[in-house]
Length: 310
Ligand code: GLN
Image 1: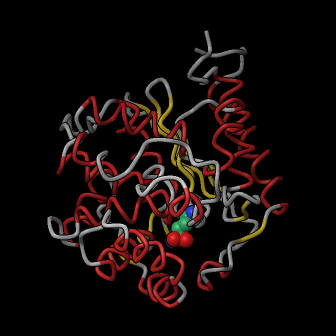
Image 2 (image 1 turned 90 degrees about the horizontal axis):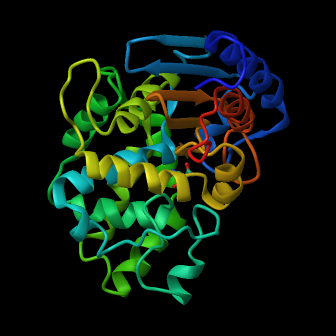
């Protein structure tokens, strides 16, 4: 699989140095005030593979809020609970080309949100689950998918999210006005805020990436958590829509199914299979981890992880 004679450890070490150096050139999210408290220089990478190998560099144990990476878990829960047809009759699977919290196309192009990786799509998707799964059940599902029983709700982030979430409420009410959302908008955004406020670390995101990369089986327990078809759907949607309006360029440059969050997390489901979790709260203009993207460019190039590498 490798491009060069470098060991996988060396490639990750180089990527860590690249990410660490790039981190301070980004900007920590502050539109949710609690997120502004993150250390802009923090950076960490964790790699887990199906053979049980792991590499951990830098801030791998630091807890941060999952933010939009939780959209992957919301999609997985919807696919498993409702099935493919029901899920995608309420949300599309098209890249939006707009920023993650855009409301624009929702009112001008189609009543359904463009995809489950932007706010409108995730809020719609979680509304479908709101009378079928409690937050406690979604939290348990998140802990299982991330192989991390210590994931809990960060109450401060949740409160901050709740207080400043009017744009997300506007999205939910617009969806309701169009008859796309039939569940209670307040309950739906509340569940969404909670799913954004889960405290994870780079290792939890690597585990999530690994399960998606393996096709839905937990390699440590052998237990199937997501069907193979659903895992494939999730990988494709991460690939085409996971990095918001940077998804196209990221797919060309990195080519690994990845989901970002404004907490600074990246979850990558790579060939191998391999799960890579990154943490770097300094973001680029699209809301993606600056150091994380730079590190993934290096890892993908050196290890030939691009989906279309021949
Ligand atoms: N909670 C954030 C929001 O709704 C999630 C956005 C993100 O991570 N891009 O705005």
